[in-house]
Amino acid sequence: MKHVVIGAGPAGVIAAETLRKVDPSSNVIIVGDEPEPPYSRMALPYYLIERINEQGTYLRKDSSHFSSQNIDVIRDRVSEIDTKSKSLKLDNNDSILFDKLLLATGSHPIRPPIEGMDLPGIHSCWTLEDGRNIIKRAKPGANVVLMGAGFIGCIILEALAARDVNLTVIEMGDRMVPRMMDQTAGNLIKDWCQKKGVNVHTSTRIEAIEQGSGDALKVRLDNGEKLDADLVISATGVAANTQLLEGTGIETDFGVLVNNRLQTSHPDIFAAGDVCQGKDFSTGEYSVQAIQPTAADHGRIAAMNMVGKDTIHQGSVNMNVLDTMGLISSSYGLWMGVDGGESTNLIDNERFRYLSLQFEDDILVGAQSLGLTQHVGVLRGLIQTKLKLGKWKEHLIKDPTRIMEAYLANTQAIGHNAQVL
Image (tube, rainbow, N blue to C red; front, side, top):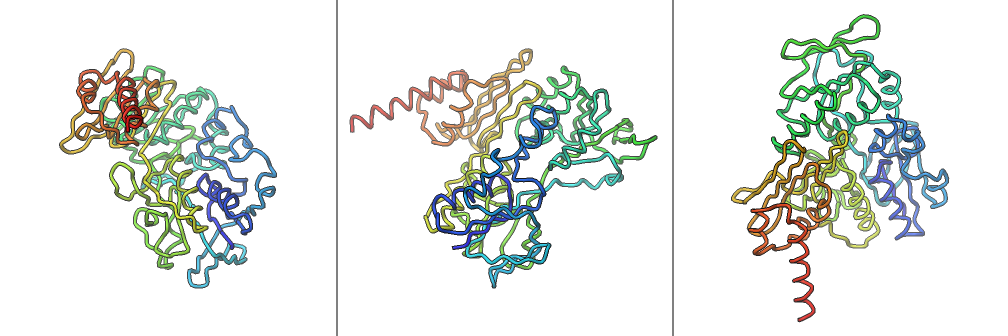
C-alpha cells in the first residue's frame, strides 16, 4: 500500500506517523512545498523574539526522525492531481502514484485589496521566509503597522511588542479578536494593549500604502490619518488551499468537503487540517477550523481510515487560547450563545477579568474567559461531554466562578450512579 500526504504541517506529519504505526509495511510519502523540514507556523512568534532558532520551529527536532521511521519527505510542489490514474505530478515533472492520498495542504494568508500591497516592506507572517524578512525590519524603535487583530494578528502582536518596536494595530472590526471574543472581552484586550504601549485602532481600515522616503512606507487610514512605517504586516485572515483541486472532481466549498471519516468525494482521497471542511462538534455542521488542535485530530483520524481502520470523526470543538502581552483569553464552543439559550457573565474591568458562560437548557455549550486560567480545562470538558448540570446551572447563572464545583458535583454523581448500577 502506498500512502501519499500532500502537506508537511501538523496534520500531514501526524497522519504520516500514524500511517507508519498502524500500517508498518506500507510506503509513506510526505510532499511539502517549502525548502525547510516540516515546521510549525505556531512557533514563528517564538522565532521572532529569538527564543528559538529556525531549527526550534521544526515539528520534529531529530534530523533523522522521518528517515528513521521510513517516511520519505519530498520537498517540491504538487502541480497536478490525476484522480483517474491516482497519480501526482510535481513541479520537477516527476510523478508519484498513490493508493491512498491525504490532502493536508493547509491555508494561505488572504491578501487584502489595498493599493500598494506589492511595495517592499509588506509581509505576512506565515512562513519561515516571512519570519526572516520581518526580523530584518522589526528592529527596536522601528515603526511597525500590523493589519488585523484577529487570532493570528494577536499572536504576532505579542512577538512584535517583545522586539520593542513602535507598534500600531489596525483592525476593521469593532473589537480585537472579533471571531473569538465578544464586544466586552475584545475591548478589554484593546484597553490592555494600549495600557502596554501599543496603539490600537478598531473600526478602522487601511485605504492605501504609499512609498515614503528611502525604505519607509506611508499607511493611509480611512479616518484621514497617515502613519509612518518601516514594516507593514498583513494578518487579515486565511483561506483554504483548494486551488490544486480545480478540475479533479473533488468537491469543495470553503474547504475540501468530507464525510465523518474525513473522506472526500473520491473514495481513496482524504483531507485534514486547515484545508478540510470538517465536522463542528457543537453545531454538527461542517466548517473549516484553522487551528492546530483540529489539524492534529484530523491527521490521526484520516490516517486510520486510510488504512481501513474505521474511525468516526465526532467533530472538533471550536477552541482558542491566546496570550496577548500577558493577558490570557480563551473561547470554547458556541461562545456567542444559541437562540433561546441563557447566559451569564462576570466582569472586573480594573483587573481585566471576564467570564461568560452560554447554556442550552442545562448544558454548557460555550464559554469565554479573560484573565482567568484556572478553569480553562473544565470549561472545555463540560462543553465536550455535554454534561447535564441540573440544579447547578442556576448556581452558575448566579456565580459563574463556581464552575469547578459544578463539574465535580456532576461528575462525582455520575460515578456514584455507575457504581450503584
